[in-house]
Image 1 (cartoon, rainbow, N blue to C red):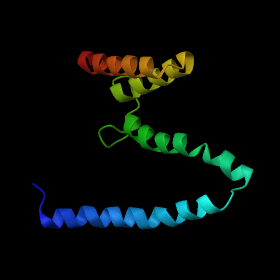
Image 2 (cartoon, rainbow, N blue to C red):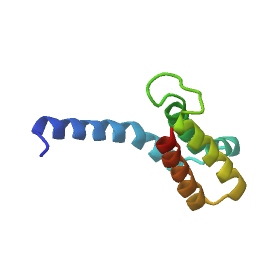
Image 3 (spheres, rainbow, N blue to C red):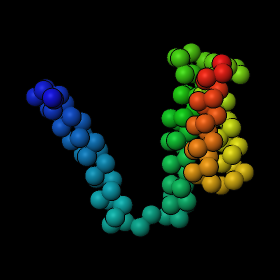
Image 4 (cartoon, one colour):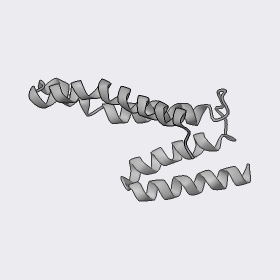
Length: 107
């Protein structure tokens, strides 16, 4: 069960998130953005995903670990290759997870 303090904290975080994002969304819906800005916005999702995934792959225990025993790194690189070669999201996820679990089990 959530305490009143936790509920207030969640509500506060939701309010801050809304108040930071809403003005930008409201402005963009009324103004047409230049083509270079729209082209550049296509790179936001891969950049954010990379910023989340790379530290998790390179530092799974909190310190830099670039070795063959790092299952996160091995499975991440292999998943990147599989995704590049096949362009199949489901295959990439299944093979990447299978490799990750097998690598952790063997090492």
